[in-house]
Amino acid sequence: MAKSNQKSDTQLMEKLVSLCKRRGFIFQSSEIYGGLNGAWDYGPLGVELLRNIKDEWWKAMTYREDVEGLDAAILMHPRVWEASGHVENFTDPMVDCKQCKARYRLDYVSRKFRCSSCGRSVNLNLPSEVMDDLLLQHGKMGADAVADIIAQYHNNCPFCKKEKTMVQQLVCTNCGTVDSFTEARTFNLMFKTYVGPVEDSGAVVYLRPETAQGIFVNFLNVQSASRQKLPFGIAQIGKAFRNEINTKNFLFRTREFEQMEMQFFVKPGTDVDWFEYWREQRMNWFVKLGMPREKLNWHQHEPGKLAHYAKDAYDIEFAFPFGWGEIEGIHNRTNFDLSRHEEYSGKTMKYFDEETKEKYTPFIIETSAGASRSTMAFLVNSYNEEEAPTAEGGAETRVVLKFHPKLAPIKAAIFPLVNRDGMPEIAKKIEQELRPKMRVFYDDSGAVGRRYRRQDEVGTPFCVTVDSETLENQTVTVRDRDSMAQERVGIDNLSQYLLSKVLS
RNA sequence: GCGGGAGUAACUCAGUUGGUAGAGUCACAGCCUUCCAAGCUGUUGGUCGCGGGUUCGAGUCCCGUCUCCCGCUCCA
Image (cartoon, rainbow, N blue to C red):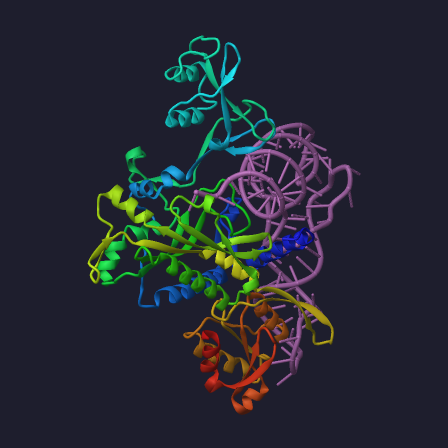
């Protein structure tokens, strides 16, 4: 993001957040109690938008012969998260330098050993688990206790030969200050809770930090129940939870969020081709729903920075006002997950290929989209302010959310032009006819121009108006949100007309 | 977690040296209106984020805390 646009970008976000609250898209969680950090509620229009996005995803991903649906429980056996690596890798001990306020992951802090007697420094070789433990104990254990542990491996100082004098020192790589760190604090990003009324460690379970594991552990259940052959996928939409250190940017980084994930199981060796296939599919999905390609970006994870499970990984990023932000990840997870679950559960996760008579552990191509993040991206993308003519011939700013009709919370609004001559009655009848077929809104208050603008602000693609001509020939005007152009349509054809526009 | 900014009606914001809390918009009920908001009349709506303290008296001063925004940091 260019610096010069920073202020207007911030203003854009503020206007959007304000509109979201005022019109019932997004509210802050527990607002009357002062709010809960990083949690948001979807209001009447927000939930429609979110549902529409999820529906479009579900149709695109599961209305095909090679993908099945699933809805796994949020609570899973705790061993799942040991197998997945989340217990081990989702924990980051962090320290802050008291001198320069820099924050580090503890394992990135440089360290040396020093003799507390003669003061000379030396490199020591200790078993790695001892090294790790010493780091974790930093600040919590006295120098003597540290010296005792080191003495089990190096009893004497190599220089002055005194016993039990070696202590560790942590060096800030930013300001060079020695031992100025806060106590190590661990942030496990998984929320913990307890099964049953007793809070003992045997009953600990986690709120899932991703929906994917529910798919992996059900791989063979789904495969056999649906009689699918490889390659095939399993799709799931659901909430996930991460105890983020910092939440940020409205819906972008929250502690509770919703994922739309599809895990595609393939024969090893075919994974690279499927990876490319799904990348293309997923990018197209966003474009078809109205996102300009130039507002979307591929970000490839650097080979050295890939997650522990991944062979290749691309993110689809959207141009948010605060910069590029990931809205979906397409990852080649290899056979890591199934192999680990096989190891930890003792149950086979292998697939038997009837045709080639081979038995193997499938590779997995993951498409993992954020439903919450996508909702925010679609909101940002749809927000427009434009000059619109007024009745007096002047110009006013028109705020309009240009949602794709499939995503719009309200599909059509119905107005009587004026509240007399039988127009309200006809308009009411039209409303009742349309309501079972799509989300509609009836409005008869104020001038019709005001009603149009109100609908623009929530992204309603069509406004139907009953006027005096309706009384003569049974036609109404249908006003297009984006062009503001009107077209006369017969009441008989109205439902068909709108449905064809809304569904295509 | 650090630094900076902010929090007063549903929204955007005023609020003087500490002295009974305001405006516009929105909403609602009418009136008027024959196609692109801000005509008329009336009405609803605020423990000034929350909790302490100072004071005869706090939206205003002090302390703490929560939340939001920006920048760092972090983001298996």
